[in-house]
Amino acid sequence: MAKALLLENPHHETDALLRAVGLEVERHPGALDEDELIEALDGVSVLGIRSKTRVTGRVLAEHPQLEAIGTFSIGTTQIDLKRATRGGVAVFNAPFSNTRSVVELAIAEIIALNRRLTERDRALHEGRWEKSAAGAHEVRGLTLGIIGYGNIGTQLSVVAEALGMGVLFFDVQERPALGNAKRCRTMEEVIRNSDVISIHVDDSPSNTGLIGASEFAQMRQGSLFLNLSRGFVVDVEALRDAIVEGHIAGAAVDVYPEEPKENGGDFASPLRGLPNVILTPHIGGSTLEAQYEIGQFVGNKLARYAQSASTDMSVNLPRISLTPSPASRFRVAWVHRNMPGVLALMNQTFAESGANIAGQILGTVQEIGYMVTDLSSEIPPEALDALRDMEGTIRLRILERHPRH
Image 1: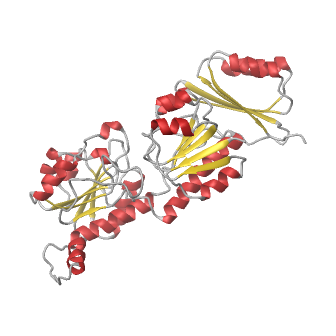
Image 2: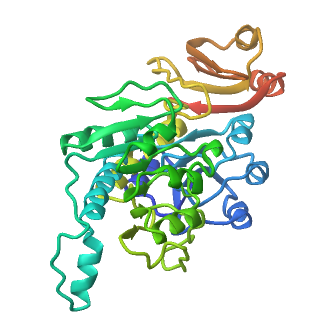
Image 3: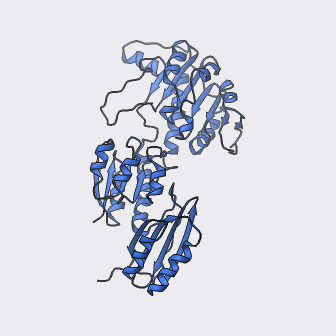
């Protein structure tokens, strides 16, 4: 029986989806380092991870039997996508499922920082009654600057505007403004003119160190800063300096350059102990609703790939899905280098061996091609051998559609 390995505790709904297509499911509660992962992947064809496990080129080279990877998160930089693609390993993520959870946390933190709720809460827990309006503000009428106007940034824009905030945004891609939000030509234009700045960029390495001492210096005196995107985006030492100096009035941070691999691990940060600073342990998408949706979404993608070779919503292979013909008995899924004439070569191989094609679809993305072919006849072994040996073949999978009893 083919096996799936799930790391870092994705929602248990995933297990049922994978078992339903014949996969044996094994779990490990935390992340694994490179050597541990190499050892754990023996006999595994489907791998599920979250954000802390890194699937390196070495891991992929050691396990050519691995067919698919699902990351129960938005980002995919923890996976060597180039090596996965060259090996014909399908990769899936969850680009939409936790959007609302992140937005609600950002809104809650914007209000909490403006009202200095953490300080009032701490005082009462320490037995001090400090009823005062000093430093407390409504969010209505303030300007929110959003850096990164993708799935999360756009929804945050809409909710913030409903609270009476003005919205400025910057994104490296051309994105239409929603509601009354205004697009700025540069990031600097956003941060100079906003009372609250919230970062929602993707995990591209080009975003490393995006916000540092220079950017904090350009922000308005007394502004607030949020980072719920990626830990490597912000220079946390520079953020600490800006808060200690009083230039930044408060911050909320959910992601860090270095994070413990498991719950209970030691956490160190120069932001600890600062006033009006909210630190959360990478929980932007950690609501029960979001984790259920992510488990459903990624689990379904992995299950469909295992069962029917569908690459719908794959981040690295051509996205194709073929509805099987009632007459189909076998499905041939072929990942290959994108070269002229491969469709003709495959069909010639089937024709010469007497195999009958019941359905077929081909997709290409740059140098990679992916073809799914349904056959209503037996597959002669010589045809499979010819396909495996064909120039450009990367991965060949055979799925039996109607097993004979």
